[in-house]
Amino acid sequence: MTNQELEVAVLCIIEKAYEAKYIGKIKIKDILDCSGKTVGYKLILGLNNNERPLTMQIEGTPEQFLKYVEKELRSRHLHYTAFYKGYQVPIDDGCIDTSCSCKK
Image (tube, rainbow, N blue to C red):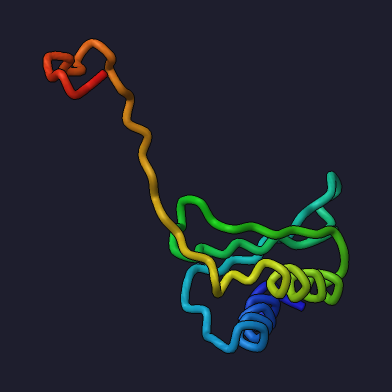
């Protein structure tokens, strides 16, 4: 199976598992050994953020890869997942207004 065929198969798995079409970024890469032989596959799903994608990988045949992806997608319930972005704001203790009597 080529990587494009695997991508189509993964999209079918997503549609079957979640009853929804996935329209985000999807990429499948080969996992190579030191001799350049493909020993497994890596799935990259952009979901809502291409900078921090969800990845799944397994060493094995294309059939084992597709079975693993199906199992993982069913167990992760990604269709219920909401994504948020948070920022940590440093607090400078020297700038806190202590003149108010209500702050104790």
